[in-house]
Image 1 (cartoon, rainbow, N blue to C red):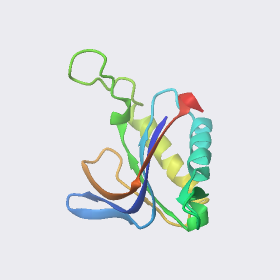
Image 2: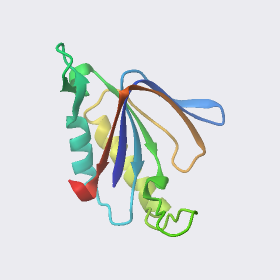
Image 3: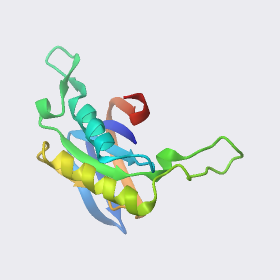
Image 4: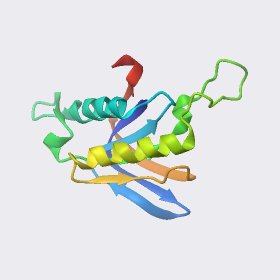
Length: 148
């Protein structure tokens, strides 16, 4: 499982011109799932993400978590995080999770986040989404379950 976490001052996702999700200060997270991922993997990833202390404290040090600042989440499914570009110039996505399984994992992750974060917005699995954001910093963290 892979999360690309961007600390944002604002972010939104649109499908067919309609806003599906919109947040202020918090994390916009791209979520990639592979076939070997489990709910236990998702639990570890969510715990790590929500525990990240990447917001500035009163001394300007990145020392505060999402919860500490009342941050919000925008969660976006992103199978292309499993693009394999080793051969040729056209990426292969065979390492990405099968759509039914990946959709279930995405929903599971959203549910787990809602247990701990008051504002959790989302994209639409499998849709052509337009995501906009103001990356605060910029500050971007990549979490890969293979490295936890």
